[in-house]
Each structure stands twice: as C-alpha cells, then as structure tokens.
Length: 242
Ligand SMILES: Nc1ncnc2c1ncn2[C@@H]1O[C@H](COP(=O)(O)OP(=O)(O)OP(=O)(O)O)[C@@H](O)[C@H]1O
Ligand SMILES: [Mg+2]
Image: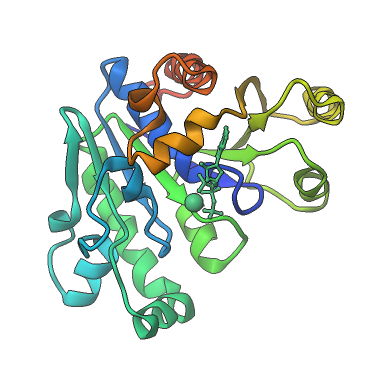
C-alpha cells in the first residue's frame, strides 16, 4: 500500500485531472487503486462519470452519521473512488472552521484502506491550511503539480513544501520559449523534480467534459501517453517496498 497525495502548487494546476488519469493508468498496468476526493469542491467524481445530482460521498456520510464505507464507488474492476459528496453552505462552513473533526476520521479510514488497496491516491485541494496539512501528512509521498508559469515559479521559491514532496510538471507547451526556460531552470534547481512532463493537451480538458479519466477518453493523446509513462515510473520509484 502506497499512499500518494496530489496537490497543485497553485489552484487549477491539474491535480484533480491528474489524480483521475494516474488512477486509470495504474489500473491499466494491472494495479488496484482507489482515488479519494479530499476537496469539498467534489469534482474528482466527474472524471468517473458520476451523476451531477448524486449526493454520495465521504463528507455526506460523515455528516449523516453513516459508515464511510458507503461512500466508495467502483468505476472499473480494480479502480474505485470516494467522492467528497454534496454538502450545503452551512456544512461547508463547518468543514472549513473545524477541519480536525473530519481529518481525524481519515487517520483511521486510511489505515483500513491500506489493507485493501496497493495504491491510494489522495486529491488534495491547493493551499496551505490545517486541512491540507493533515491530509498531506497521511501520504507516503506528495506529488506537487506545477504548471510552467511565473505564478508557480514564485510559489516554488517562496513557499515551503513537505519533505516528502516530488514535483511534476503539467500543462507543458514545448512551443513556448518561456516554458522551455522555466522547465530547464526547474530541472536544474529543484530537488525532487520528476524527469517527466505531462503536456498541455486538449484531450485533458475534453476528458472532463466527457466525464472520463484521460487515458480512457483518449489513450493515445500526448498527455495520456505521458501519464502512462509516469505511472510506469511510479511503479518503479514510488511503490512502497514492503
Ligand atoms: N495537461 C493539461 N492540458 C490541458 N488542460 C489541462 C491539463 N491539466 C489540467 N487541465 C485543465 O485545467 C483545468 C483545471 O484542472 P483541475 O481541475 O484538474 O485542476 P486542480 O489543480 O484540481 O484545480 P483546483 O485548484 O480547482 O482543485 C481543467 O479544466 C482541466 O481540464
Ligand atoms: Mg482539484
């Protein structure tokens, strides 16, 4: 059981899309995976074809006092996911104000899931908050998703990251001179920069519009092939060695 958290260096970097795409790629490689949405925005489920009006999710079961296991769903054999669930504005404020009420649940839930799944992927919202800190602490490794722009560059150099962070470049356009330069700079200056890139690719945006993980929607798209290469790299470099 390897627990990998994915978080954007900034909002919109692609953490949720890559969580779904990574889960799909690992599953194609024969791995059993569960992807968990740890953001109250509840968007990960949309990559797994969930009906918009379906309220199911771990926040919903927690608030209703139901067993959390009822929130898990199967997308494909060996590929499961847990949506956050639909909550109302008051419930959302409670979640934001008292994150420890919910984070302590995950401390035990993750242990139960570790007995069932070799791979657990956590989709963590961007930002440094008590909630995100508690969720990143559950993971063996944190994949920080960075897009090659000035915003991410500044954040990379003025923020601190948990020691078990790795950096993955997403939305890379090699035709951009500025992005080429940033890529080169990060390769040379960032410790734990993964030597692979996920390209900017319309197929990523289209996959979400089609409510599918990237590799299922268009397996031969450049970004999907990049994700498959990354999943193979993860099997060698990130899998917990028992
Ligand atoms: N490699 C890519 N190529 C093209 N579009 C991409 C790529 N990665 C992500 N996107 C698009 O960027 C948008 C944001 O992606 P996503 O929701 O995965 O980011 P996020 O980091 O989870 O954002 P948030 O901060 O809201 O959680 C989506 O519309 C997605 O389709
Ligand atoms: Mg997200």
